[in-house]
Image (cartoon, rainbow, N blue to C red):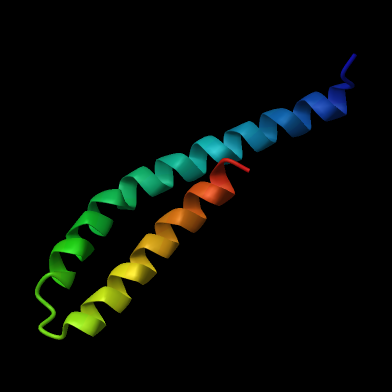
Length: 67
């Protein structure tokens, strides 16, 4: 049986995760806009490096949320 303290901790964690997902969803259109801007970078190597960083940021976000 779960203690009241453990249950509250689980609820707090769940709320934090929901809030983080909402925060990410609110900035997600900006990430798509960033990919559009990367297409305008004339240097292919620099464009790929920026794209790789954006992908890494997205990947870390999902890793943190679903851990």
